[in-house]
Length: 168
Image (cartoon, rainbow, N blue to C red):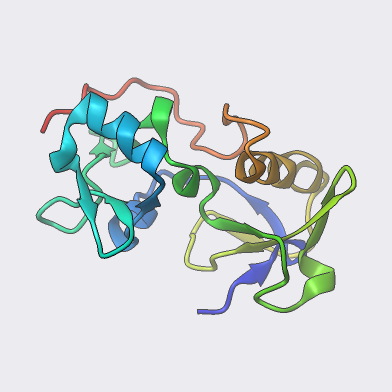
């Protein structure tokens, strides 16, 4: 898969399609695992040789993917959503691992990072970055990745309805 530098993206909006939760396994760190296990139990997670993951349902989707009558999907871990989920479909890296350094480069203060997007996300609009995307959305993803910010505004679905409580 070839990741796209952020300067080739006009904008992004979560469409609540749930594809990211259906197609990808989410690696979590120990502290994320601990919070989830305390709230939902160890059976909602999985482990590999040297990694921890969010659990998967029988249909392959993330155990925390919730649906609505309207066909939209939302994460039921909103208050403790893992960092990998918060910043998807973007990758924020310290090096230009996917090339196109000039188009991926982003400065947050004096810190230089490289921002790419997974083109599998249907919420991406390709083209020249809009002012909103450049100044607010990308900045929020970078701040989330750096741990400067925890609250999501631009980098999550704009659907505002409550999900039923998660049950195992």
